[in-house]
Amino acid sequence: MKKLTILTCLLFLLQTAAIIAHNNIQINPLAEYTGKYQVVQKRGTIGIKIELVNDELVCTQSWDGEKLLLRHLSGDNFIMAGFDWSVKFLRDKDKKISQILVMGTDRWDKVKE
Image (cartoon, rainbow, N blue to C red):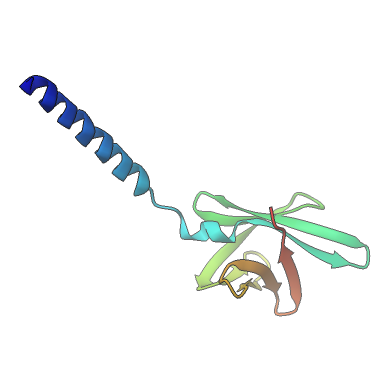
């Protein structure tokens, strides 16, 4: 009976440790910026997709597939490598990313998925 009790306790401890380890997985803070964004222009709607690649944000243009690196400056502020364009992520009232402001003038809306 003692062996069964000890074995049960040991299995419980191992399962609890596995759950704790699973819940402590660290999420990259840049992940909240990922997603699809679009802007409506005279010629129609165009889009970009922002993904995390090797712990960096990469923007892929839908019209030509070009990939551009977004370098983090501080807070919600980034710069587009190669162009030196400012990129600011804007938040809604719930503090969720809702838009991107590029060069202080061009607004891109986040596509709800």
